[in-house]
Length: 276
Ligand code: CCH
Image 1 (cartoon, helix red, strand yellow):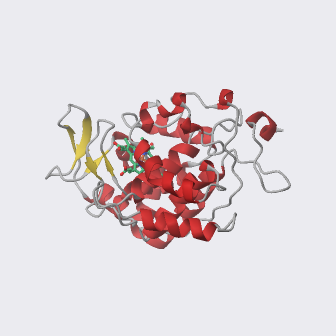
Image 2 (cartoon, rainbow, N blue to C red; image 1 turned 135 degrees about the vertical axis):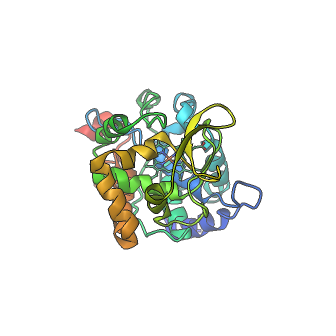
């Protein structure tokens, strides 16, 4: 086995995606969420956070409530890390997100290796950097602007809620009828369905369709309430190719946040160095 053979790792990830006894029979959505949460802690101003270092392995970040359920994703990937010990966790987690999106018929996302795992524990980002689903447009903007995204990119990225479901964070249910196939259905449903604010079985407020089969988070609804976000929801509902292109660009950018590579293609170990 050759160190650096990322296509072999990609194949191994594909093989682990079908999981008959997990969720909708697929590890795909939770792998996408792992890649996103590993990267979404980035803070543009301080240069801290981001996927380099796979810092969710540390207790502090693992215990952020927003990361509930992501232990499954890490567990699915562990045998692959054992099989290919030369790949860093930080590269493996981000690559798994990219492979899962493509496997579920989504776009190809550019991905570059070079992330390292051995960053100092003092650089583990604080809790609370990921979005809180109970809030609205101001909160979403402050979180994603902190990472360096604009309104269009925020809406494109949110289209990942075509995948998977809520379970474990207090919210319940999938956003779309086929949660293991990437598409622009989420945007179409945001615009075309009637959404009713309801308390779910554990008393948490969310939005449900008439039959309580599909759901939206308060943050999802903010995308249709806010006029600047809504423009993009309408475009992506109308034009699947545009959504795929914009999603691929924004997701690729997300995975690169805070990853500053040296001349040999390896990321710097310390965020402080990376900022220089
Ligand atoms: Fe998300 N997301 N997400 N999300 N998310 C949840 C599930 C998934 C928010 C909240 C939640 C993005 C943006 C946001 C996925 C990808 C992305 C859940 C349910 C909540 C809550 C978790 C559970 O209960 O298991 C909020 C708030 C925002 C922004 O404001 C972005 C950006 C992405 C990726 C690009 C995916 C995929 C899932 C499904 C996971 C699964 O296990 O099925």
